[in-house]
Amino acid sequence: MDWNPPDAWARQRAFLERLPEDLPEPPTALLVISAHWEAPVFTFQTDPAPPLLFDYHGFPPHTYRLTWPAPGAPALAERAADLLALTGIETAFDARRGFDHGVFVPLKVAFPAADIPCVQMSLKAGLDPEAHRAAGAALAPLRDEGVLILGSGNSFHNQQVLMAGMAGRARGVAGEDFDAWLSEAATHPDPRERDRRLAGWRRAPGARHAHPREEHLLPLIVVAGAAGADRGRKTLEDHVMGAVESAFQFG
View 1: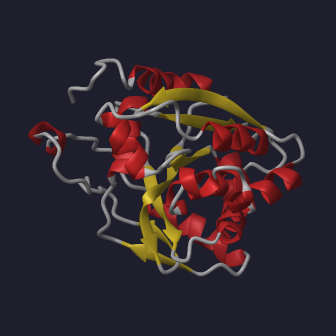
View 2 (view 1 turned 45 degrees about the horizontal axis):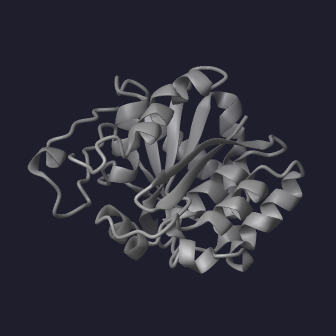
């Protein structure tokens, strides 16, 4: 797409392009929690060849012709659901759900060959942070099986602010107080304190300004729940569309 300035997304693109190099080993599969899918219970894709779900409106025609033909992984979906069930967490399956833009847009850049099996997992309605942390903790054994657990969202997601920034009406950089808090919380050396802080994110400075609705923060909380004792590190801080956006990695 055409942006002003033209390199608006250059840092995020470079971050995604180098993501495979930052991993300790190539993943055998991807489990992606996207901010763009909510269901009554945690739900997993089971289509062996998921289509793309163009869940956006008003964009240029070429953005509806993108491709990313990664295979699905029904066996991984069942394994993940079994792990949640072991801790009493209810799950469901969806055989028709396609990859939404929270999956195929970043992963088309990070894994352009689209040759790694991928499963998408929903958020759970109600958006309770503790429920999502617990789900992440239940999924942790997948990491020892070569599965990369990815959270796809935004560390700042106030649409009014972002749209003003896109139109060139931004004043300053929004979300800096919240980003400073989030960076400290997500990288805290004590995993219990990290999880406690993230679960209580609503009390952070600028929390509701950064996230009027929390769906874009919850994928990070799932990933942190799966991190166990691994300390988080900040792998991206970018100023774009009038706001600060950050990314974090564990392990």
